[in-house]
Amino acid sequence: MKSGLVAAVLGVVAIALPMPAPADGADAAKEQGCLRCHDVDRKKVGPAFKDVAAKYQGKPVDEAVAGMKAKSVHTSFAEKAGDQVLAEILDWVLKR
Image (tube, rainbow, N blue to C red; front, side):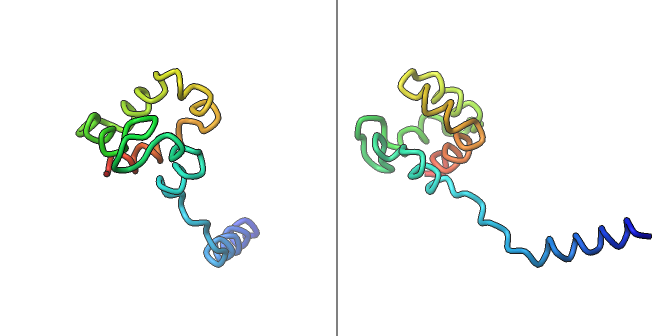
């Protein structure tokens, strides 16, 4: 009986608490510093995101993550950000 009551109370509390907004790939790209070297529509130091999207068109996000991690210039960034953040960013990039 107690466990059912506890579960019900926790369910109500979980519904009542505000949920954080899911991270957006664009926000993550800004937060991680991607825009220092990349732009959506034009080449900067690195390729434009639209060019990256064209390169990986129709391919899974994991393949784009692996391609990004294979570039030595991204090594420290990729380790710091982690695969989940990289996938969020590249999912957003691939939709350009």
